Length: 351
Image 1 (cartoon, rainbow, N blue to C red):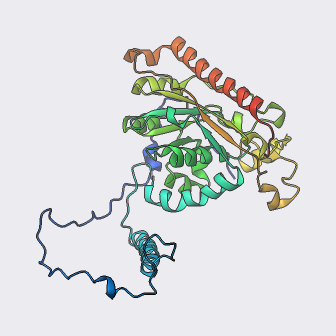
Image 2 (image 1 turned 180 degrees about the horizontal axis):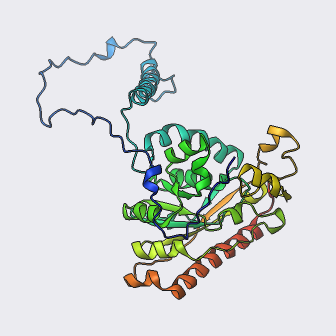
């Protein structure tokens, strides 16, 4: 396998990423009747008298079993909704945006697959979700860890299921994600896009909630001995993007992901042959084969910090290296401080 080219988010060059995006498809709109259109007049039937009600039917509120038609109606609606969803997928009558994001598939299928892992396996506890704005663009900046990028997926579920506006988090991912078969298509459907300033600015300008993990492979592939120690955040490209769009920066700290695959070693030669940035050696992988790829069931906490506003700076502030350095350091320090605070409060890795 050829070496995958990893282009950092800090690279502000326009890379022509539109060539990797699928074309926008639009389905036919829903047909609706004209408002105020009169229908046929129906004859009003008289209500049955009290004597007409059978004696074996329990009165409302008396603890009797629910009426059968209501249960059948609910089941029929679910079946009809499922069949309608399948019909739209088979006929192509659905929409994706310019980045390949499929909101309907994400809501009805992909989130349903991730939710049991989120709720039952990692038992994620979410804090500070009220710091995420109800509408408009915002940039969520989080630490990155865990050998495999499951932390980003759990952040997406946390935002979608706990935010009062049911917002979707659009993650910025490395180029490697988009050259892997199957993973590429699923990432696009979930709303991921290339970690470049061009794509990030377009999403923020559209009022989207964008997530970035500036540590990149340095964070996700660091050894277990350096757990919860933030790696370098690069040159502050995410700060420049937020300043240009005037959106708030929301620090996010994730505790629990570091221990799902304790990385004790790195087979660098094998990683180069496969074109990966690292090849992890954990207590279970590759010694147990496919079973070693099952993550440990750690208990997670995701905390969203107070927003750092950027709309008060002039437009030229995005090109001020000192300001970018100071804001980058402020975000990094806030994430690191929250990580230490959550670790002190944690009683157990698994419980």
